[in-house]
Image 1 (tube, rainbow, N blue to C red):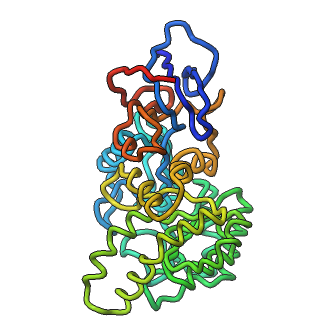
Image 2: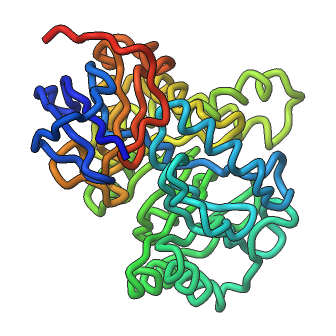
Image 3: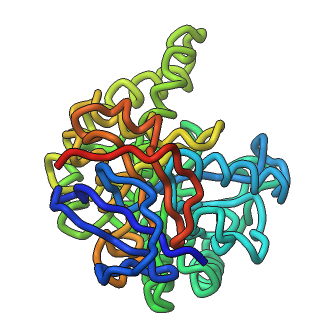
Length: 356
């Protein structure tokens, strides 16, 4: 296999690096005959930390062909790693290891209370069973995803049950992600000490300091939340409309406050079409998150949170290259100059030199 070479300003620090792909690991040791793929501004591979590839509509079974198509869209956009907190079924053996598709962290199918969540998706379990089922899932995949609440008026998973889930999953070395879009569900997830809060709509900003202190990350899926806001504003008045419009209107300022408070932000798209992580980064910036921090939520910060180092010797050989500093021009995110995944160029354009 041809050894690839990339060089340029490596984020987050902006230091000049000259990297060679030694298989699936970066090295700074020069390799004779290495192919220079690109020069530019270098990110250690983009991350979509909340995506559900492989099903067209809620409740549909996992479609392996569609799964490949969705993951290919991620790769083309510069995403080298995804986290799927919930899938329509157990993924095939090639998921996360196919050399031309993103690395993957996943939680398998969702785990929900009876009478909540989409029909035909996930497991419905009693509260007494929930810690054991979640721990078994996390032992297999590293993560368990709990639907902590659902529609307005539904009862969230009780805090003592969630605490038992967290304890059981942590005992087997796993982590817990919780879907919460209601005030009580979000507060309960924080009180239980979950590892990541997904969406976090209607989260009380007073809880952000506790999240930062205990290491609970927030994946706000802000672009997806914003996309539905206009439609919901035009809908007839109802408790559902009032809940959504109120929560979604406050969500951008909440995300900006989370970043300011020191909460770990993870960028995730949540919806179709796949490969739109740039939209989430830009939505964070529009909400008031610094471009540097928004990019980190979709790259080096997210990779570190999921256990992967950045652009250092020995790190996985993933990289997304841009012609200019994407922090200064977020539209750069739509046109990566090159994408390297596992030491292989999965996207490269004509070589262009880069001015130091």
